[in-house]
Image (cartoon, rainbow, N blue to C red; front, side, top):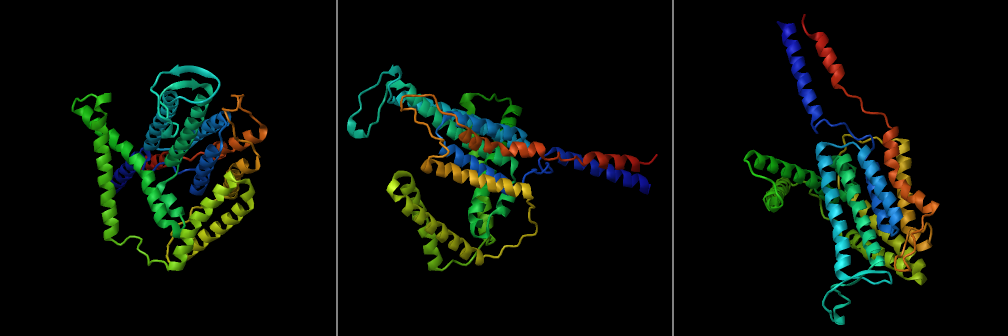
Length: 393
């Protein structure tokens, strides 16, 4: 009787473990550390926003899609990636539609959209007019940039755990990390709410059509807001992350870092004779921000029970991502690598050089790392085998 009872308990445990393994609760962890995913998504955002060449943006988009295919994800992550893909494609179409409706400048006129005359004191606003190839190419560049950034965040949202992202945040940026974590969990929760509402409507015999979209979106949004309010009230009632306020000196220094960094960016990109002053302002802003971070970290006590290990290869890849990001930002100022393209300068064919291609190809390094990483072994088979051996004859 005891052997039979033990075997029954083991078989129940095996079934319970197999059920959890098929769900997202025991999904296989990411083969890349969280810091690597953060460095990658920031690199993709920097390269995409620094590039105006449609050929380079196409390479970045293909690299992001390849990483999204190989990255580990749950069912909710797949749904979130699909939702952001549809949303990005919609924004791409809207960018082209706005370029057609507003008309644009250029010498290669494709067709003309009739529209009313708009007074000049409205700042050059136009409705209709000639639609040129230069304007459509510029709208395509804007749409590709938005699509690359959205898909990169979709891959990051499905591959990296939001709780690990929160644990990886520095102590001084804990509140900002908490806000980012809530934002990362918003999309999967909204997708799950939409799926649940759609299933309930299907069980009641209601059809899902385009005009029924408000009946799906409004309950999901209201449910997400209500869940966020409950979480905020519970955290406020428990005094979560309550810390003493900083002194006025560190607060003033931290607030001073923002105008210094903005002024440095403005002077670097728009005034060639202020490059040296821009570098000095950037160093002062970075120093002020580091001082504020160090002071805020000293006023907070954080207990870490587990630190995610980062191997030497991953550390090198993270450093390479930071270097590529800095190279993409500084390339517009120093002229190397040349990632820019101006379609209004005669609508010439976009250049595709080796140095620029290597920079944009660097956004696909997680695909190579994931293919080289060993596959996660499943633990359900050995447990089932042991349970089978323990079964009574």
